[in-house]
Length: 329
Image (cartoon, rainbow, N blue to C red):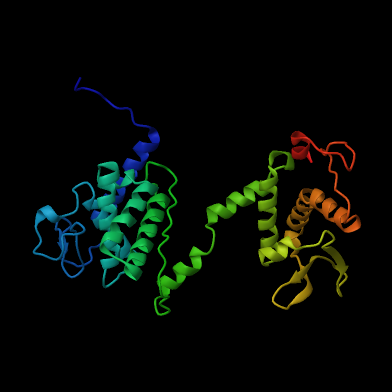
């Protein structure tokens, strides 16, 4: 049967339409990198040559050009980035685009960019590692991560959400390169979607959350209420909450911390808008740590006796336990 018609979901149709509109927009509405630039050319003189990775700098031949399904995206992406922030050299961006093209063809057997996945980006880095190393490979990874973010934010991927991170670090931080410094800073921080996900978990009712969810989201909440080290949050005493009236007669709410690096005991006052969040987090952490605190209190009061929790078998202190009883104990 040669007349097979495949069904396309509405989501995939929208992505393909977005892709086509993006190409048209960049081709017909954005100015070229030069006044005489021809979209159809394989080389934009003075800026970039749309050749495959690994073909070297020999005299350009059309068989060395990027795949016909991919080249329009590469051209559109370069022109779009140029319209936002013109650069003198697009070599690093082209390095990433070339690696991505080969990875897309190898993994998906197509050059259409909306078929990319995180696996394709992983493969692109593997391909890059065959041609580059050290800081050059790290810069390639930075550009691949930017492309990944661009595709997701502009609804140009059929797989839906795609979050790919570059894990190749620069061996030496180049303080004279603001882009690299910004990357190192942002790489240490969670993205906005991750923070919103934690906030959504924290807002749920207690009965809908697992102990792990309660603990993780509560620690995050306290870190947002009063910037601290995680070790300081975990070391908070059970009676850490304190309320005082300030000189203006306003009731203030704070937490008693013992800060590290020689700072010692201190009170961190919570902004009024964050007080309900802090109280909710403390309440959950107190509930989660109740059994642990009971055990600690027992060990301090009766150091020579065995602690019996609720599920501990009721047997004589000196009796030998069965295997099942040992597990329960």
